[in-house]
Length: 281
Ligand code: AMP
Ligand code: FE
Ligand code: FE
Ligand code: ZN
Image (cartoon, rainbow, N blue to C red; front, side):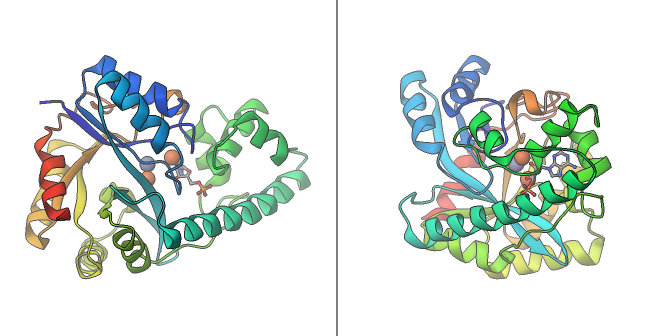
């Protein structure tokens, strides 16, 4: 049964739709609950919750944190965090400042190649958004240097590419502790996106379990039934809850639909959320 989507982005980070419109979209799709999981911020949650009351959709307040992992990134989803937690908020502020510094360096690199990006203008164009590489991707498309967001990343913005500059990250352990301290539960997002070998996946599972992570996102846009089954087996082996999320970004990733993914592969029942919440208590 297609009832929930525990991984969605709004224009509070790099999605195209406002929190209210994201919830309205969920309503139109007939979903019972969605989690708002913007990158490094829960600022869209209050508006989404208000919309949830209005439209009769349950809104789970969350966010998605990038964590450092052997020079790369692993993403951690957080659910039901206290938005007023001081440590959480000061850390999120630090992340924004750090990303801003990184953004300025990237703008400098692009300027050397004659690509002019005005950060202040971007902030005006995307009010309330955390400005990051996805916004640079939109600029590169506008400049005719890339065909799509994905294309812009592959050509210019992914690690190792010309304009990539690494920002600073929390470790998986620090992120899990931060989330727990703010009363929330944490889930490892899209475990197959990191292209880990067996040993790497074992390390991710073990360290996440030891850090107090509650779940892994077994059902994700584009994952085949075989991959999902593999992840569900890992979840069972390590005592994690299995969760499901599309990583919906609205028109910024038009191939991904809320609740159903890329080819309708997502069909998450409400039970997955109920089980995660049981863990919380
Ligand atoms: P930033 O934190 O500013 O470095 O940007 C990271 C965000 O860019 C991620 O959370 C994704 O939403 C997006 N992103 C990263 N890699 C890709 C990619 N290959 N294709 C499309 N979006 C990506
Ligand atoms: Fe994103
Ligand atoms: Fe992610
Ligand atoms: Zn995401």
